[in-house]
View 1 (cartoon, one colour):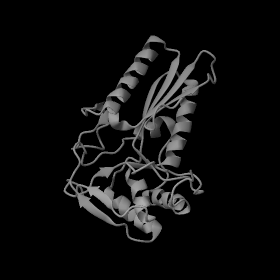
View 2 (cartoon, helix red, strand yellow):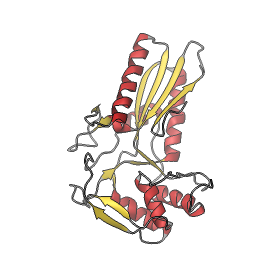
View 3 (cartoon, helix red, strand yellow):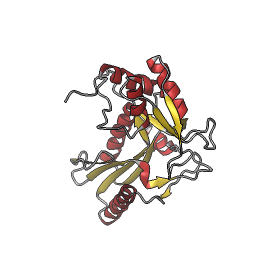
View 4 (cartoon, one colour):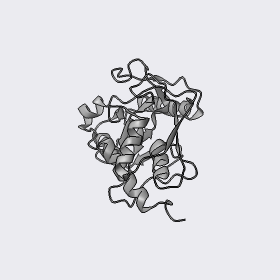
Length: 243
């Protein structure tokens, strides 16, 4: 079942052992925060200090599911924490089509590139990062899909609660993404700087070493490929999907 665009629940029928119950939860990592001083090496997450209701709900769901598995050990539960999914299917047939003003960076850039929006607002250019703009972990949706598959296979043979970060393990700045997209579409992207937004961290990205170690999963697609596939879809569907 699907509840919202940002919290996804998936149930699978018992696969290998008829007594094994499986559940699959893939929330975005708003439930978490990293040390701004050491965003890569710190391998654990702490509860969110944000006031966002969605962050609190996601954290509560993770805690409930952990308690469920402790009470009923036959459960096999996967909790996937992923970061900024971008890109599109390489065919150009499937891509992200936000309703209204895009909330995410790459879809907004794509709409600027295709002429639907005038300019991208870059919130903050005075962060302690290489170019002054915020740094985030971006992951291609196809890599993310692969991560879901191997995680589901993990559920089939082992009970317990399995928590994995799915991310590139490196950060890209807002201007890195802008430049990659400009390269993909062959023209400059119009942008302007705006004040920082409250609550935004200078930089964070995933430590996906556990997924690499236990699932043999890692990203294979670059930021350039994310931009290329997004542009391929957007240029074929300049106004999005038909109504």
